[in-house]
Structure formats: C-alpha cells, structure tokens
Length: 376
Image (cartoon, rainbow, N blue to C red; front, side, top):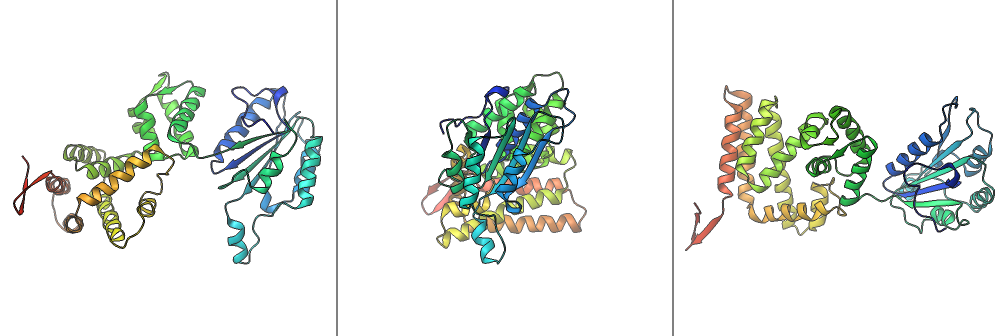
C-alpha cells in the first residue's frame, strides 16, 4: 500500500478510500479524522447519519464486515464503521489473571478482511483504530498494509513532538478562525502536555472567549482555562527550582489576591521538597536517573524537546541542594503549616519569609579557605 497520508483539508468523496487504519498511542488523531469525515459526508437532506462503533474485544470480524455490507438504516448515502482495537500488552496480563483479553486475528478473520476489500461496499468507510504501542509489525497492521494499493490508507498515530504539537494547535485554531502567540502555545503545552483531547477542549473555549479578536494571547489562556490554578502551581515550582525570589513573591501575591488558600500553597511547596528528598535518596541507592525523572514527572515525555531541559534542571537542582537543606525546607514548612492552623498569624508573611530565606541560602557562594562566603 503506497498511500500513508490522510486527506488534507476538505475531504473529497471521490478520493475516499474504503478503509483507514490508525495505529499508535495518539488515538485522538483518529477521532479527529472521524469527526471531519462525518462533517464532510453529511448532507442537508440527510435524516440521520450511519456511524457505528465496535470494540474488537466484544465482537467478531465477521459481524463487523456484515455490518459494513448491510444497507444503512438512515436515509443517508454514506456509512462509517469504526472498529477500536486495544493492543497495549493487555493480552498477556489478562491471560495470567484468567480473563479473556482482546481477540487475536485468526486465519478466517484475515480471509474475511481480504475478501471485503477486494469488493468493498459502496459509500462505506471502515475506520480501524489500533490503540497502543503498535508498530507496522503488528499482525493486524500487516494484514491491512498488504492489501491492494488504494484500498486502505495506513496512518501511524504517534504522540506529537513539540513542533508537531504547535503546528496541530495552530491548525485547530485556524479552523476556529483564530491564531495564537508563541507564549500562549507554550503555556498550554507546559500545563496540558500533549493531551490532544484536553487541548482541543480548551482551544474551543478560549476561541469563544476571544470573540472578535483573531489572536489568542497568554492572558486569554490564563483567564479561560480550567487549570489556571495548575498554572500558578507550575510557576511556583518553576521559580523554586531557580530560587527566583522575585518571581516567587510576585506569584505568591497573585495567588493570595485570587483567593488561594495558604494551606494549598504550603502543600505545593512541601510536595516539591518531598519529591526532591525522594529523588536524592534514590540517587544514593544508585537508581537510574531516567527512572527517577519518569516517576516524578510522568507528564513530560522523552520525545519532547522540553524533556531535556526539565531533566537537566531537576538533577542540577539535586546536585546544588544538600540533603540537609531539603530537610530544613520540609521542617520549616511543617512549622508554618502548624502556625497557620493554630495561631492568628499572617499566612502570606510566613510563607514569604520562608521564600526569602530559601532563596538566600541558594545564592552563589565562593570558597575562602575552609569556609563558605556568600557573594554580595
């Protein structure tokens, strides 16, 4: 099969293939294609639309193919049949538990699939979504890949790298009549990662919020998205990593002005230092650095350009901070938490004092004899 790209822009009925196969971890790309396909094939005269979904774990290929060949119920000339297949290593796990996992492809299944695509049903599109860490060597993928040229379009749906993610966001915004500034895209990625479902939902909301304005900026993202609190947390922890006193104090002031509870801020700080303590102990045990990073930052994938920057930042911080300094921070935050809960004190003032002292301790130092002397 030569074709590996999906139709670009408006889908042309005359150029549609009988089948489309997506394989990989980013199944939202398949859902996006199905949505566009449905929008393109719907007509004003349609009284309904024939879109049927199957999970291969609960149905057989002969039943799926029979459905594809059956005359549609609604008075619509087109039918879309979607088959979802989960291939993420669950079969072996389920077998060990005595459960039935996803059904394997039999020789009869393969024969039925091949016969169908020799003479596919008119105006029927079969979309197969194979979800998981799937490669072209997967048995089901190989069957579709070996079909006659033009019968099926094969698409590997990988997690998007940063430049691909930004291009996808800009394309989605363009479909909404908008564009976005680089800082707005960067903040969206920093908090939402590469979760296309989440990003798509947030882009639709922020596009509506922008109304007649064509360009989405950082302030729009902060005003509209549900995870504004998550953004503040990210800013606080990012400033803690850099011991950036000015940014910490500005972000703290903003958080308190917006009604942030001091207990939550203390918890964010405490979790930050507890993670560092755990990482420090694991390093002493000789654990692999990538394993440690994956545990502490599961939302940051190795394929992203952001990975290298965050990886270096974490272990640079761990080299800079001693175990004693980390324990000091955890103890101090415990004292502040107790004071906030039991005394009539200014919570913001206590937290700001901690920030100032923590940053002072992180100032560059120069060696003079056997003692350390702080610069400036």
